[in-house]
Image (cartoon, rainbow, N blue to C red; front, top):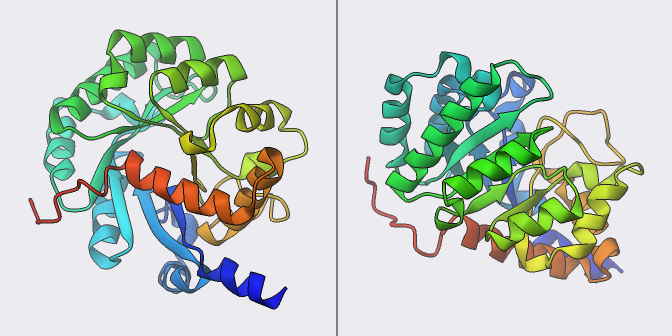
Length: 274
């Protein structure tokens, strides 16, 4: 048993979606991030949700060698997005260890931005991703039909990416998988009432799943309701292993490889293009 626990700690987990720039980490950010590696976290992608947080993401990527970054504007924040903002994102996307455009998409749950405005900037950021040849991180909440329609119209299968915090049905999941997208699975899969998501995980090939926290949000059971962080991903991996009837080690190993493929890290030019 001790050997198994030691081996687990040596397994590297890839957190494909985090927000360590969030104010929830203001008091202990440096201490928490410094401890991630010893808890088995191999890589983290910090994801921008606004121009400001995208700038903060670039700073985190500079400071921590095991961090990668994504730059983009969340649908709730696009009300103030301009072409000047797009120009900033284009320049930021060329920097070393920036691996995606995101998070972008549609959010009809909070509806903080007019829906037509959300659609406009969703399309514009998809165009940007195509231009800079990076995958996209898609945020979609209560907007499945419009999200899928836009992805199909824009031929997003040619861009590639991940549906972050996947929350829709098995049928929608199959559409996303058929387009070549990965499914981002986080703490919600551990919730007792998450039957729909658990069915998606059961259906989806493990080779198309990536682990994510969306921290500081959506901490898994047994830490539900607390501030989330990458260390808690072990609970997510365990839940996926139980659903798919495979080992914890298989989930960690395969999702780690998936994340590297998603973000094209094997092909990423390591020269600083900034």
